[in-house]
Length: 257
Image (cartoon, rainbow, N blue to C red; front, side, top):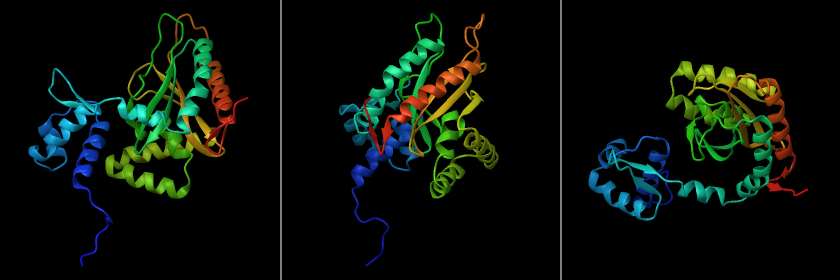
């Protein structure tokens, strides 16, 4: 009998999960042939999976490119699970108040493998603001939040994450990321220029359950003219919000005060 690393095999399920994982990593719609090529499978193998996933609402077709992209259904399923649902519900009034105090948008993110994903956000009453949509994903290595999620892991978890990152990114980029993570670990938060928008400074604090990071809270700071609140003041308000949420979390449960 030939040994195998898998105890069980469900080829159809694996193909469906491969498609979801592929689409979740790429914001650009991918055609059926593109999906088949990236997964090293035939169009015929992929096509039926695509139809079922589309019928169930997990993916949708882009009208212009004829490619497919993931929907927010998986995000909805994730946020309905404990303790994430409780954390998001508890945090919602806090981040709304934070947005009003700072006149800046803010958002809460969690780690999803080698990415971060935004699960909740709050918009200020101000006429102008810069925000990140719910469901937005980006690589850990490209985000302020990613530095926190790496910095607050155990040594063994860091080794696993580092192995993943090394397979996905250039050695020089990984080394730069690790240097930034060391800074994040020392100061307890991240303040860094956005990797996606010029003139935006991402300020991010961890939401902790004891010493374990469960989420992050971030403000994409944009300086206004005239300036209403300095970046240092906004950072302090963000710190208070992160502390208020963290203090309510204990062993995965949210304590109501």
